[in-house]
Length: 376
Image 1: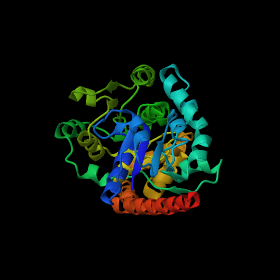
Image 2 (image 1 turned 180 degrees about the vertical axis):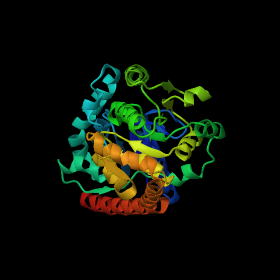
Image 3 (image 1 turned 90 degrees about the vertical axis):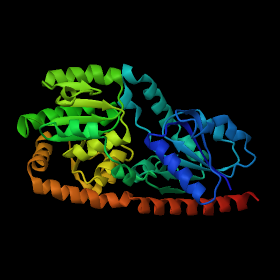
Image 4 (image 1 turned 45 degrees about the vertical axis):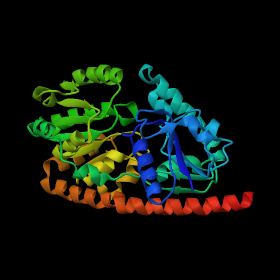
């Protein structure tokens, strides 16, 4: 039997891409024929051309990864297959009202407007979080279930960290605050700069912020550069030498897994002030490393973190700074939070993820058989 996957754009290194690859691997291990089809792909050795799907002699079960607006749903509408929508969340378009993000604005707007269409064409909705599932529950009664991102977080922990990066990071003085994610508005990088300023003024004058992940050059190197200057913070982008790493703030850009592991192992705490997250892969990574986590209580963040860290309301900075002060200055509190993080991370360990997948596959086969019998 074929169980194929389709998505508008494939990258082997982002959350949707790794989810797709791990699902394919698990399907193939259970004897299913499974290919990945994409309109665009930065890793063509992992994918087939989108149009090739429509010439397949058998179209049994199809998983559509839905995370952005595209023309894909219109092509899939009449395909005679049992259709599953794997919903990764679509960021509300209002976060991208900016000259820097016009394309993201329109694609997110298109995607939010396609939720009803995708709901109607699907036989099953499989969301990566309960928060995401609520987008569909508001408009329809399709069978649905929740399966977290299929990912082996332990692999990152098991990597040998980049020694050069580790040496540079460990030479930095002061509290090392880490955030991992794209440099885009919904991640609130400007709030991280503001909170770093508060930490330096009231808790640790030598505190540093490491922002790890790809970023929009115009947005970060203009607006955030100006904000850092107004706050009296030194800032560097794509650090290359010791002095770059010693800046108050540095944006690493995209990094290898070995470099990412070095950041997680060298940081003192993970701070997320995101306004919108559908799930929160970096939160799980940080917890898997046993790193103390403090995060703004955005819905998707709260669901992922639960008891694995401390939730704050960033709009109440006095109370939030009291929490951060305790975490930074109290060794016992950091140890406690590290244990909480490790315990919560077990919910996303590979055996737990595999159980979620097995339930998903069982439900898929059961529902597909019911639909197939009705057609016959």
